[in-house]
Image (cartoon, rainbow, N blue to C red; front, side, top):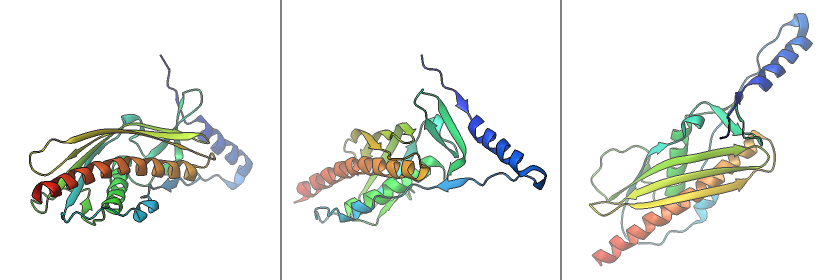
Length: 211
């Protein structure tokens, strides 16, 4: 069984060395850098097929593993130990940021601005509801990221939900945290593409049934 070791030692050692160099001049703690996920710009080029069906989409709830559900960006080392970086942090709670990005991606891919992470209980037009459970959110600096998501699309009415699973794996060219977050953006775009395809298939079925 693998043993997970959580360490902040590297950060504190760096601070101690900085203080030693500063000497009597004093020592101030370095400021953390905050990172936010962002939607896929390439999704804007996707032209959804016209169906004539007006729609709303609600994304949520979104869940993430407890290990990464924290302000610090959590990375995995080659020896399977885990590091939480006090100076590389998420700008917003991870699950809410993931929901925001998936909603923005879906809006682009579905060609509608009526995609939200807030369910206002609207009855019309037809509302598709999307649940996303992130079961794996791995970050290996200088190597790759992997996001595994189980998702469900609940269509309007009493039709059965579409269930799916997407495993998105993206390479990371450097040890820079910005490159790591960019890779997560691409992985979320792949998940959004699968969810959008499920919604489009259901929307086309609704259109065909009404014609």
